Length: 372
Image (cartoon, rainbow, N blue to C red; front, side, top):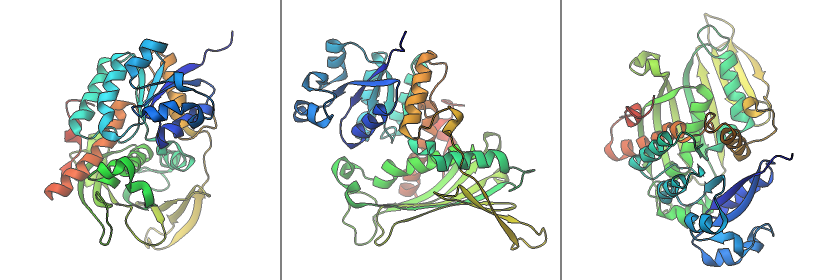
């Protein structure tokens, strides 16, 4: 008997919704059966926008209407503006539909905590947040590098510092729904990088001290830039500052001129840099009496992200995890499930609080008594 394809509805068929549609096209387990959107003109033109895969009969203005007319899908992907994620996730989960929610998880800590509680109350459902950057070859290679080569008795020694700088394309990213975000970069982009660092290092952020601002000469609706110093530690070392590693983070959509990124790690026995072509470039200290003397080496790119036996990347990995999780009845949760994703989301909220108050924020306090 042929395996039944799992069904999916996309809520919010804008750029991100169409990106998820492309991922669904590439995954053999999934079939898109409908779109939910409040833009009725969009729904009337669904046949054109979906390249003939759907038509006007496959569109509804609410998930409840869709279920009443067409039955319940296996999954709903919520690709709407951030401030709507919490309410839509609740409506989807009350119908016992497995949700994927685009990042950022929510607009406030309270909303995020309520989403976590919904996931805890419905363990048979699988949940995920669309922080798919962690599931690229570069970040997977970095994670494997840390597992193989980083530690007190390993080749690179212990992690000491990270220098992570992202001066990205800005352009129209500030327009559309983003113009309503007071912290454009923090709310929309930074969570990807915080999630990647947690994924790569298998450590949690402890303290954050941050400033966000609008770069001079930029007529933006919200902040273009965040600069932050963050601590990282294993949970058992949260209260032992001597064992923390530290991260210098700059995220920016406001600088004029060429774009560039810098992803560098500093260890007790050398340095490493993430590259797009060559995996990890390393500089290993070869003289215990003079740390300036190094040997150039490298760590080759690692295929098969997450060892799933696929060639998937990004969103397709999340779809694969969601498919397997549904088959398990919720026993196997996607790697970016609500409980996991909240810890990355919390860092972005800590940056905002620190910038407003001028004080350092201890991130684990946000999820104390809620998560382990």
